[in-house]
Amino acid sequence: MPVLDTRALNRATLARQLLLDRADLPVADAVGQLCGLQAQEPQEPFVGLWSRLRAFEPAALDDLLTGRRVVRTHLMRRTVHLLTAGDALAWRARHDAMLRQRVLGTYRRELDGVNLGELAAAGRAVLADDEPRSMGELARALADRWPAPGHRALGELLIAALLPVVQLPPRGLWRTKAGVRYLLLSSWLGREIDPLSPDGSDPVGQTLVRRYLAAFGPAASADLRAWCGLAGLPAAVSAIREELVSFRDERGRELLDLPGAPRPDPATPAPVRFLPAFDNAILGYQDRGRIIDDEHRGLSVAGERVVLVDGRVAATWSVEADTVSVTPLRRFSRAERAGVAEQGQALALFLSGNDSDRARIA
Image (cartoon, rainbow, N blue to C red; front, side):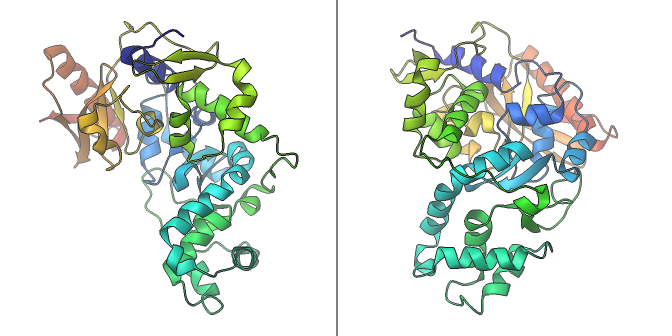
């Protein structure tokens, strides 16, 4: 098999993630191409899309959220993601078992003896009136019947695992602070989630493999599992293996990919890009060495916003008083410093509504 070095993998990731060149795509298409954006921090997807789209306007994402074309829901890895409505409906049932396992792994003692089927039915009955509720309100409505687990464990089991729900706007709208209130996904979108295939053929799993490789490949099976949290995809990979091409990385791992997917020349220049907290360009892999050095790997799970220089994490950034502040992780060349300053000023203008272009490099 051909060997792809770290730089070749880096450029492939940047191309798939729309970070090598900003794309002229509608926002909904970009969200779909990226297989969603991690979104537990409500404002972060706006920066992620600004860094990827040539003419991104926050109002476009707001319109998609209020127009019910994209949704905020728990899915991959039991984290909140911004997804197209179609992907949320198609993929939710395939993630059910994983979501339950992860919540039970956290609250196993508190939830011992709880009949999950009965609890799910009771939760659905409470939400059947289509009245938005917070997690606490839903848990309190059922606490008399299930007093032992406590509100936190009961609420997380319902919201993050048993019930397919969405976080309703104004949560997630541009420059808006709002509490989290939930409604059943089927009520919000007017359609039930797609059921699993009754014959066990797992077409959804196969779709997930193809879509993941289109957005993140070339990648190993371990990377796929790290992205979605699903352990049961080897059969799906095997079912479509003849469609795929194989490579190896410098460690000898087999990497799979779609035959026609972009794999740019490793010498392709990579522009400076500012990434939001928990960006999937980093978190979408088990082996993140293609984009972040091992010594900085902890930044990706600590919620630090990072700056890509020559395609790799080279700084962190924050914003205060309409000023974007950059803290380098290594020494910048003069040209790199100028590129970071230019993008930092553009980001400051975006975040401030064109009121400030202040950017500071520590």
